[in-house]
Image 1 (cartoon, rainbow, N blue to C red):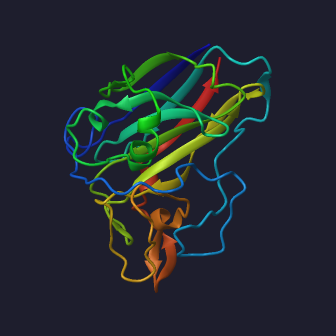
Image 2: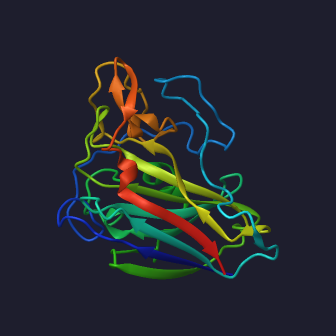
Length: 263
């Protein structure tokens, strides 16, 4: 079984983070106690609690038609950067089995692991998944406007899996942060009941020390490397210590779409 990833990246301004050059300075943080994403049935009542598990909006069947019950030979992931995004993004993509005991990296932006960036630019993966996964031969620079990579799918990657993408860029303040934190996208896939296509959705964010809180009231207390699933810290303004209107500066605008399909 092969796994194939295709990225269609439309790059913005010629500064900021990219896989090939320019980065923001970061510092590593402490290891969190819970390193696995929330289940799809999590929910939350709180507007400001950092341990919020609000509804997980990850897509499990963008197209309801089941096209295969016998597995697949290839998986294609297409990432399209928002054409208005600036500066360029940096990313890592991987998959995990259902109980999160196995991690298979699919592609890693080389600057994340080659020492040219200071600290933890993609803190969820870097602090929680990197040391428990194979990284040799899986990294590279960004090729624009598109690039394709094929991998052998490991035996442990069978049945129910989740495909993840962590994405970030710099110079994107909002009411809550100086530099919004990296976003985690995900999609659940049952390899025994494959649908025609899937859309990866943002399920949370992970801060590192460069993501300083700006809101004086109502800011979360999330530790570096810890996944927070309250997306309104990204998508909404701050208002009297709570959430205000939708924010056009939201880091979700970095990516236009991340889609998964199988052949």
